[in-house]
Image (cartoon, rainbow, N blue to C red; front, side):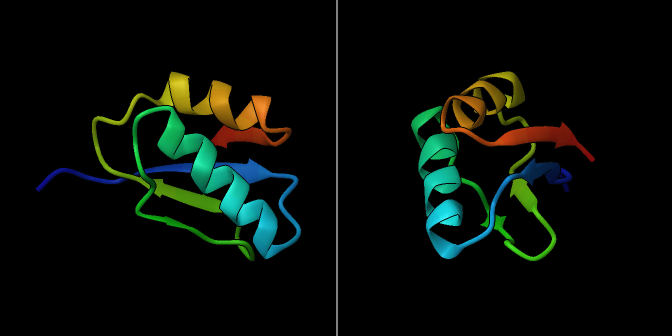
Length: 67
């Protein structure tokens, strides 16, 4: 079974931020499996275009780091 990809998203501090990050990733072509506000982790399906998702999240005003 393919593994999930995990990105650490910085700058999220409310549920609105989680929704904005989810919209950004979905707009970049991949709906996240989950986005957790407390841990800052976004889980993506294997094979997701991490570069495109990272750019979209950064354009939305958040930071991204692979974890």
